[in-house]
Image (cartoon, rainbow, N blue to C red; front, side):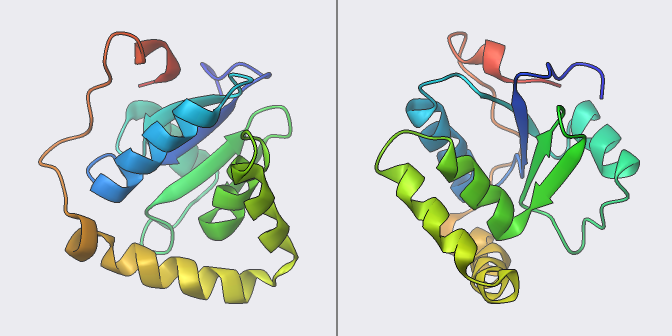
Length: 139
């Protein structure tokens, strides 16, 4: 995928979801090795990845992790835990949940994702990053 350096990973997120936007800011704060870039699922690059990997957005509509060096995507709880694994301590400890079968992890994940707008609210449009954070976002 053009535009994503091989030494970074791209987190695609629901740009209008308050929980997702808060999660992006959480990751940015703890991404001490500067490994992640971000883009809304609704962005041009988000649509390119969705199309290239034939992602059903009715099934996966909140987080996708794209690893360009592996040409691989991860979604739902696996994406969230793989991100956590690369963050600073103590967040990286959450990656221990990768030993739990994905079907169980995704049941919890899907329950939260299904209710995220009701519980956390929704924005009218995608988050606009501050000038300091702009370099971490792709369109």
